[in-house]
Image 1 (cartoon, rainbow, N blue to C red):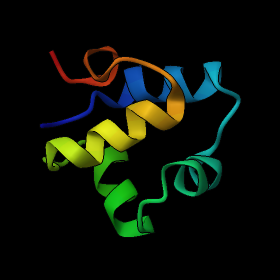
Image 2: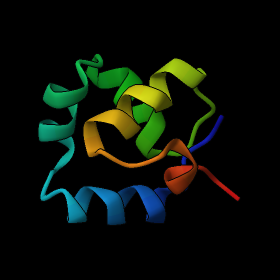
Image 3: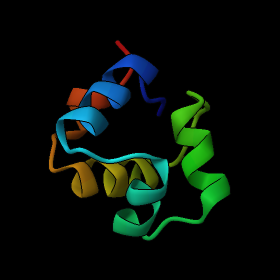
Image 4: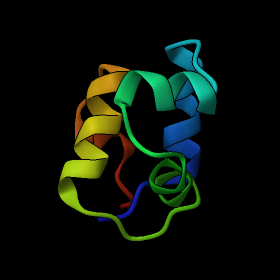
Length: 64
């Protein structure tokens, strides 16, 4: 699964979070979060934790 960078950045802006805040909230290691932000393929659980931390649906940040 891959996150759409623009959609992810919009969700982060709506939640008033930067990457550091998102890392703390999601509990993910920084390299895993960097993979999500850069649009690399990640496990469903990883993108799920990011979506949960941002309080959005996974589909809201997935690549089309």
